[in-house]
Length: 184
Image (cartoon, rainbow, N blue to C red):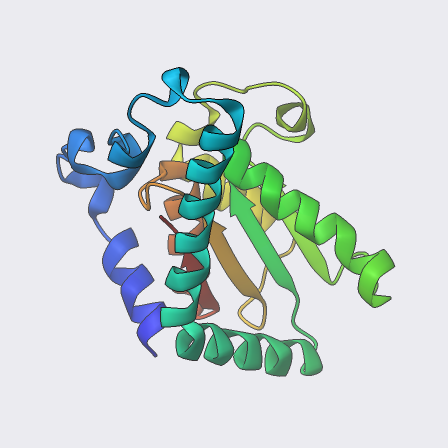
């Protein structure tokens, strides 16, 4: 499966290789927002709106892979598996937020979908600097929640290389679980 293979390629050994962070898209200046401070509020909002449209286009290009992940996650859940999200900072908060909304929105048990954030619950309200730098902590936090081979892990990492997330993904891959990642 492409999703798992991509993550294994991303996760396996990526931390042992030097990475030029300046080449990551998440570290670049967006030319569309150059001079943002000189724009009127309406012009500024138009820039934001145009950039937001690019997200929908990017998602559309990956609908086949996303559908495959949804179908495989649903099958895992029918077989007693659960869905886990893991991330650091805003990425972790978004996973926890989605997991928190599923029980009231879809009437599912609260333990069916779990969000894990680097730095724990305190990191939901305050930055937990440094907590994202430990792949061991990512693996430990995932396994401490009883993650098994029949569960599904979705790592959320804008850069695609957050050590905490990659540690959790590596641990899930070693168990043979379905893994995927949301990246920029």
